[in-house]
Length: 206
Image 1 (spheres, rainbow, N blue to C red):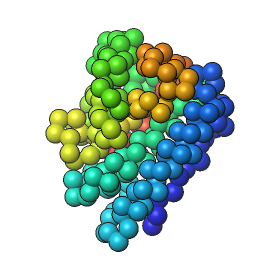
Image 2 (image 1 turned 60 degrees about the horizontal axis):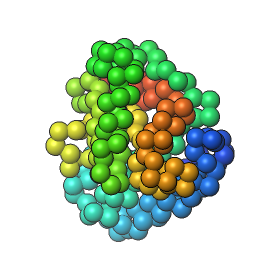
Image 3 (image 1 turned 180 degrees about the vertical axis):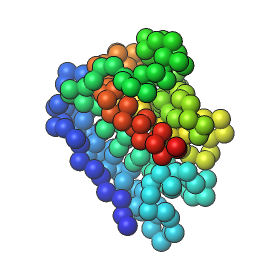
Image 4 (image 1 turned 90 degrees about the vertical axis):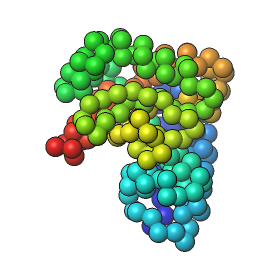
């Protein structure tokens, strides 16, 4: 079964002024579409699980082309769905409790997550993820890698929030000012969606 590009859950201009319409059109319709198309090409004739999650959890068995494009597809689909023009600006429920227990406050979490974002050299992602033991952690990965992939030794788990720090995600509006892009991210990050992702993973692990 071929993978398909999911539609954005909002209009291209819905996240303005934080992310501009042109960036969203290019990022979704060109970059994400390319990951989907190239993933389908890379998997042509191969035996692979239908689940994208299962594919990523066993990605060491596949070529670099599958790894890069499967990661690109998964990462972007998660990214679109944690952004919202009507974002809930605070975590809630069990996730709020977990962030407080791990980082002491939401501000401390943002500071440490921001450090990962700003120190990721070149292209990559910063993540909030749930470890296999149920605890939460943050990390960053290069290129289109993510914590699901079995090529990670220390940072394995289920991503519930990710920030794309490839330049194509922000360069039209922010040029080289990654810090400004990070600041804008907090205004459109929907903690309600992240909390739902967290609850879904916890229910799966219980």
